[in-house]
Length: 181
Image (cartoon, rainbow, N blue to C red; front, side, top):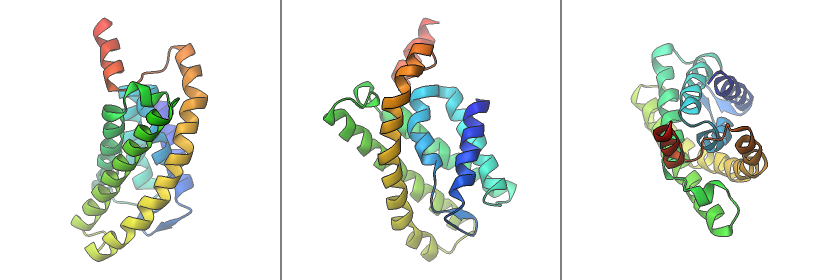
C-alpha cells in the first residue's frame, strides 16, 4: 500500500509539468491506474486513493475538502479497470485481448475525466464551460499515454510479479484467492 501511494504521488508530481491552475491536464497516474488493479488488488486501490489525495493537496494545491475529488476519480478509474478487465485481456497476449484492454482503458479514462471535471465545476473550481473545454484534449492526451505504456508494463512486469507471488489479477481472480485463504 505504501509503495503504491509513493509511486502515485511521484507520477502525480511529474504530471504537473502540463497543467492549468488546480488541474493536471497530463495525468501520468493513469498509467498506474491501468496496471495497479491487476498487480496489487485492494491494497493498490487504497494506495492509489491515498496517493491521489496527497497529489491533489501537495501537487495541485487543492484545499483538503476539494482534494477528495481526486480520491473519487482514482476510485472510479481503478474500480472500472479492476472489475471489467477480463483475465485474457489482463495478459495482453492476443489481439482480441489487447483490443478489449484498450477499450476498457478508454472507457474508464473517459468516465474518470468526466467525473473529475464535473466535480471541479460543481465545487466552483472551474466554470462548466472551461471544464468541458478541457475534456477532449485531456482525454486524448492521457488516452494515448495509457494505451502506449500500460500494456507494455503489463507484458514486461506481470510475469515477474506472478513469479514472486505478488500478482493479484482482475477482481474475480483476487476474490477467488481471498475465498481460498
